[in-house]
Length: 217
Image (cartoon, rainbow, N blue to C red; front, side):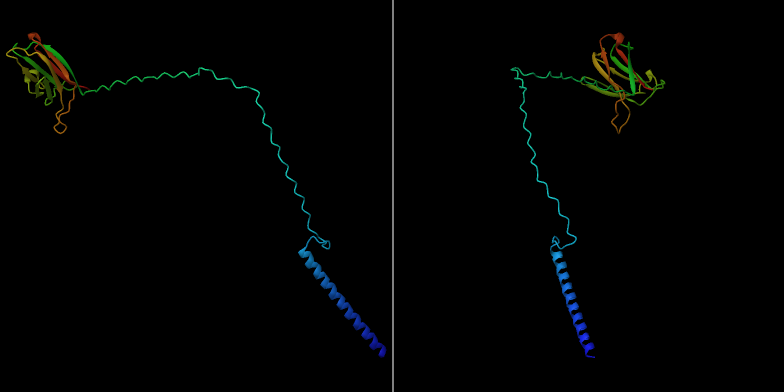
């Protein structure tokens, strides 16, 4: 029985020694892990990090040398060359627009029944020749002006009009103007024909001027 007690004590001591060695080895491994974590490049690291490739040194770019021009620029002439100026084209003026009146007119000369004055007379008609009474006829000269209406002189028809001038029982002389107007009180009777110019002389064979106004189609 003594032998068994001695063998038991030996076994117990062996176990204690193994435990101490295991703990010591564990501590060493822990220290190795900590060292590798702090310094991955240590020789004890079985998986060292890759070594970075060295950065190539920057190579200086050579500055190209400026080529010296071999062509000598021409000497400027004493007389500068000037461009030929473009001639200015004057625009042709546009002629004014011709106003188209609703009525046209024609003048016919006749001998009045007597030679004791001058007569301005006429008619107003539509495109078919139908008389148009009621149109104002404006007549004026230097210092004289009057207005009559178509249809007031039955001698010339339903649209006849007439104005007589006398100079001491003789035909008048000078220039007279006649223009037909539209009867429109609101618009102040606008003109509807061109101004007709009449020249009176002392000739008793032509002391009556008949102005006939015709409406355009």
